[in-house]
Image 1: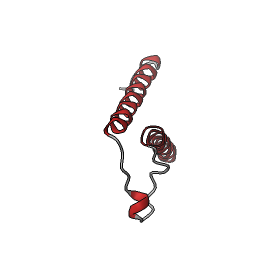
Image 2: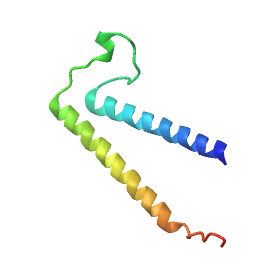
Image 3: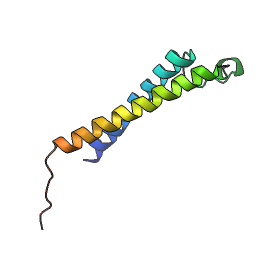
Image 4: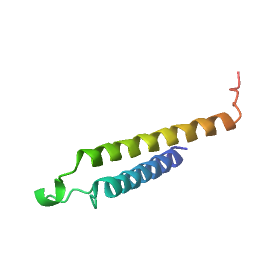
Length: 83
């Protein structure tokens, strides 16, 4: 059971990293979120409207994930614990 939980957590972390990278690219024009140990590569000038757009996209992604999780939770039958 523990290995399955670790795989699930790892997959979720990878999906989150991909989502954040996509938002950074689409809204802030940042090609990677990887640290490259160079000020010219790791620090970016971004517009306030780009930051706002990225924050809205992240908020909407979180909202959609929460709604999806809630829908899955209501679709699954409640398991009763043995007394």
